[in-house]
Length: 137
DNA sequence: GCCAACGTTGGC
DNA sequence: GCCAACGTTGGC
Image (tube, rainbow, N blue to C red; front, side):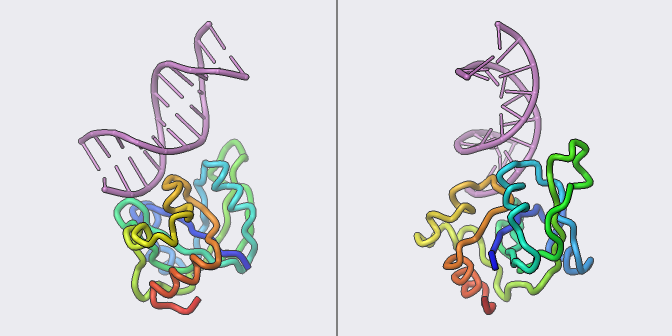
């Protein structure tokens, strides 16, 4: 099973909204690198839910519930969406500042490429962030 | 609110 | 095919 991180501005689509809805369509990705990651997701993979801009912290864990399909919001039919379901919040959100201050995350795409909205999370980083967030990996 | 990083577009 | 101009994202 692979691990991922997906960014959303809480004003646009928040963790709280996903929990309330019980399920969410991850659409609107318009970047090819991010889209390639969406295509690589398998049902059952887990992903961190990251609040960008006003949050700048990882707030929860969700599961990929439906593998990629054509993004209905993309008229050109180029980009794809996936469906996610919320699993659990982190007991303690893990902030970008925390991650940046730890040198073991220097190679993490969240730090390296701040503009990428969907990215893979290496196993060691997944474990470390779960530990920091107070949840079992 | 600013700006750096990055992607895309369009003129040549 | 290059590159300048422009738009967007997201951290600060």
